[in-house]
Image (cartoon, rainbow, N blue to C red):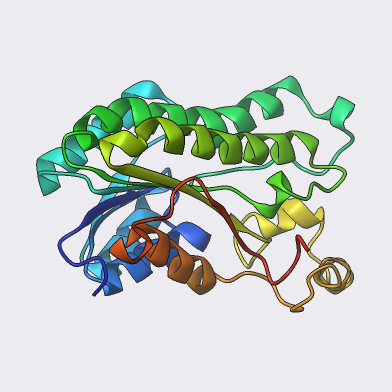
Length: 245
């Protein structure tokens, strides 16, 4: 029960890594607001862990402001923010990705972090807390064809480090976590096409020979958000089976 008495918001938590994080947080004693654009998916995960489901578009200021208010009203305080919501563009040469796709990737992957911080950091400064940004190995070891997605995750890693420096004196720790591709709804987008051949080709780049699982990411997230990691801030933890070596 490493998060007993803690409250958390996890975005993009209706499926994939976000759901894994929410479930692990719930099992470790946290009260969790499960946030997703898909309200039914958020409701399903929230029901499993006794949490609160909330529909939000994290790329829009009004939606994030409403989410933050609902969490504070429900819990009284917010101890942990996990910025997990993310999307990618389809694999393509960098000059062929549409402007609309570029804008959407940076709105969901980057602007959302700004919006959640703007909505909640002032609240957290009074009591301390933890912000965990779910980045990617793509931000550390980029692959061709996903240029602007790679860049958005590199942005998230740099943002996490500068946030950590600025907020440390106020008792707020900020870290990033960097999964390799996993069995999530984004896998097909990363691969271009989800075939045995494409999976085998990608798995050959991971020394441990398997994808990340939601459980892997949930376990790492609990550690980084618990008091066991009280001296850890500004790191980008690779949970990737050796992919970035």
